[in-house]
Image (cartoon, rainbow, N blue to C red):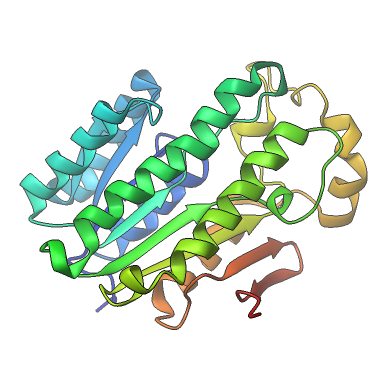
Amino acid sequence: MSMFSGKVAIITGSAQGLGKAFSRVLLEQGGKVCISDVNQKVLEKTYEEFKSEFADNLISQPCDVTDKKQLTEVFRRTREIYGGVDLVVNNAGIMDESQWEKCIDVNIKGVIQGTKLGLEHLRKDKGGRGGLILNIASLTGIFPVNSAPVYAASKHGIVGYTRSLAVHPDVVKNGVRLVCLCPAFVDTDIIKLDDGSRVEGLELAQMMIDKYGIMSVDQVTEVFVKAIEDPNNNGDSIIITMKGANNMPIPRP
């Protein structure tokens, strides 16, 4: 039996790409998952795809992570149906330098709000069971990227926020762990336009692409599962490239 069997997860941005893959692997391991996404049409398609296979272990809730009421409803409904939450995956994100305020709102504010709601539902002094909050950052949260400075800033912010909160004594004593995944380029829609071409500006990042490659979703999903299964991970930023995964523990003063 999988260690995640019977556990409950909330995954934002899970209609497609990494979020969809994360949802599937948890469902396959017997977990209960609330999928959510701002793209309702694609979310409905993913829900229908999963429903026949996973039935009672799946719910779907449309959500724009920049809207606190919508995000709060995702958590409320999940807890109402499944009785609690064990894992929160703040995966929703965008790469759009031309709309930098939106990029910050989704990538930073959305993750912080999702983390705060996750803490409310996970921490033991508020009736939770403890658990894990897994925030999806990027290799651009570790290294500079000249083609996407706002995106890089947002991902740096996620790494700093997650690491800092992970060592807060109030969080630790209530049984909540926090971990960051920092994948290099992944073959998902975040780096593509509707016609399948690359987003503007990515040609400037070609040096990084040449060095680190473009990974399959499955490569990241494998590390995702290992991060959940390792009870000693807390505050780590896990870099994922074609060469494998490398944990970066919190630097100690």
